[in-house]
Image (cartoon, rainbow, N blue to C red; front, side, top):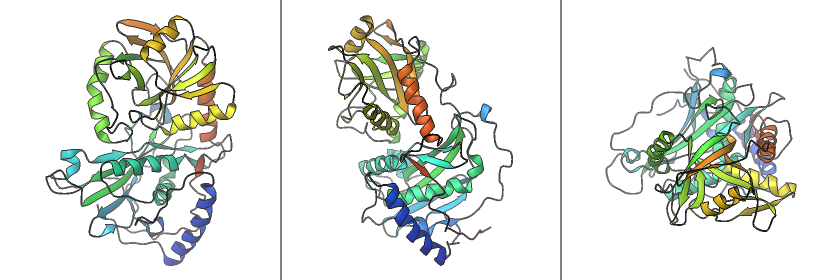
Length: 415
C-alpha cells in the first residue's frame, strides 16, 4: 500500500498552503469548519504515482451500472499509533494487501462515505457539500475508535484525485462520478481493542441512475414489521459497514413479496425511519389541514443524510409549507392515505438524489401512494433544483469546484 516517495515541490507546497488557507476559509463561510488542532495528514504533502495502464476508452454513460466500473487511480493514507498519519498518496487503482488478522475482517472496524462529483454545464467539476460528508465521516470514525483527521485536508486530497482522473467524470446528465471514501482498521492482531493501525482510502466510479428502473421512477416498498435496521443507542446514525450487511436478507425477502425496497420501522408502534438506504420524506396535509413536509428526526436511528439536509434547507428557504422533523407511525400514514391527505412520499440520498414512492405493502395491505398520479410536483422540484445546483446551472455555496484550490499545485511523476 506504500506509495512512491515523490513529493510535491516545496515551493508549490508553500504556495498551496497559502492559497488554500484563504480560499477554503471563504468557501466555508457560514458553515461549520472541520479543521481542528488534531494531528492530521496534509494535502500539501500529497504524493502522486501515475498509472501506466490508463483506460483509454471510458464506458458509455448509457451502459453504466452503479458501482461496477472504477477509475484508474485511488487515494491511500496510512495511519499508525506510533508514526501517526503518513503522507497522502494517489496511486494506480489496485488490490490491497493486508494481514489476515486485521480487525476490519473480524470485528467490522470499517466505515465509508458516499459523495459525488458532477461535470457542470460550464465544464467545471464540482463536489456537492463535501464538508457534510466529512463531518459525518469523522463522527463515524469516533464511533468505532478510528483516529481523527482534518476533513478539510481530505476534501483537498479527493479534489486532486478527481483532477487526476478527470476524464472519468461523465458528461451526460444525470450521470456523475461516485466517490467512496473508506476507513478501515488494519490492526494485525486478533482481539477486540482500539486499533493501532488504520488505512483511509478513496476509490471512484462513474455512475448512472442507482435503480435500474431509472433516475426518477417510483419504487414499491415493504414496510417490514419484523426486521430493524437501527435502534436508539446503537450505530444507526453512523455510516459503518455493520449497518448494511444485515439488511441484504430482508431486502431479498421484500423482493419475493414483489417490492423493490424496504421501509424500515422501529419499535412496537412501527415508527417510520428510513427507506432502503435512503432518508424518507412525506408531503401531506396534516391533521390540522396544513400542507407539510415531514421526515423522521435525527434521534439515533436515522442516518444524517447530506441530501436530507439539503432538501430541508431548500424547503425552509422556500417558506411555502410547513417543514417538520418529528417521529410518526405507520398508523398515521395509513390513516392519511385513506383520507387522501398524502400527496407524495419519496426517498432522499446521494445515490438516487430523490426517489418517488408509488406504493407501500404493510400488514398484507397495499397502500397506493399518489406521488406520480399527482405529477410529483414537490419531489420533482426538489430533484430538479438539486441537479441544477450540482451541475452548476444554479450558482450555490453548496458546491465545491475542484479546480479552485489547485492552480499552484505541482507534482513530480514517479514510474
